[in-house]
Length: 166
Image (cartoon, rainbow, N blue to C red):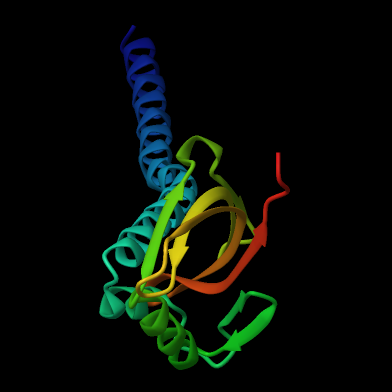
């Protein structure tokens, strides 16, 4: 009888240890699963900050979101602009006139290109006008590549493609 009680207690201890290990594994992997879903959200948030900074004509905020590298690329009106310094000069000129972005949030697509890079696609309406000139709305299919850095996600390239007339 004592042997059966001892054996039952041993089995119960074993089951509790196994259960404890299972719970520990679940708790350890839960943050990993949550983190795996987070990059797309972080990329979207970075894009939202980029649009807000553009619409506010806030060069400092835009600069903070651009990749600080000579490999940064923005193609505008068929002209490549390399490096954030050159891009900021161009933004400064554009901000003197009308420069407003209206993305279609429901059409935003984020494609992860591994753990450290993401591509954004979104139709966007640009309202652009030189100083003192009437602004013209133009629809673009915006493509951007963002990379993660120790400071967070940064825009590595901006590739707007004029949308076909409808």
